[in-house]
Length: 234
Image 1 (cartoon, rainbow, N blue to C red):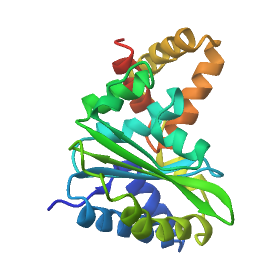
Image 2: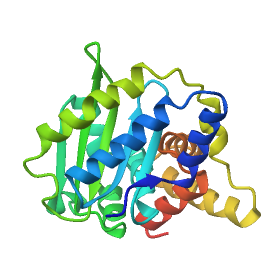
Image 3: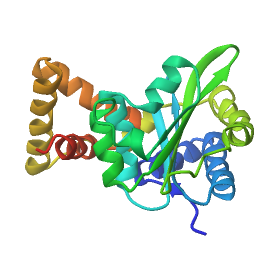
Image 4: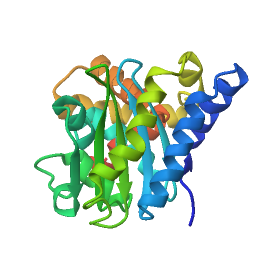
């Protein structure tokens, strides 16, 4: 059974934290990945998002497209956002994931990544929602009947990741490099234009939203731009 492993951006962030003597978060997230694969072998992606710091750490076992799902949710909505806002567990299966009237961009990006079900759980600490856990699976019923078990196995660890780790997130942002080549910048500008038109905002607002979503999802701005272009057919 192949384990879920950090995407390159998350791996670099973990390395930076270890270099400065802070390896607690990396150990916790990696442990969560091992536990979820034991519980749900069909799980192909896990991410832990921290609300206050606005960052996400992602593990995947199959395709890189899974890493873009979180960024798309931060831009256009999805079960992860709903779980945090509603302070409740949100499970989405194949019919929900394809419901473009509910989560348009999310529906398209999950289909491309081979995701047939997802489970999003809020992380609570001291009576407040401080983050979220997002799980993605390759089968429709991967999480059915396992909500309580998953929450029990991962919830305490996730809370520890948020409340116990003394993190310096500048290293996280440094690990996600903005596109430098001209062609990459052009792709980003096209995606910014798509966002501006689709969300009825000006160019600078659209660019800020794209950059914030990329940083929060733990991927590069170029990766987020490509996800936007894909789901919008650009």
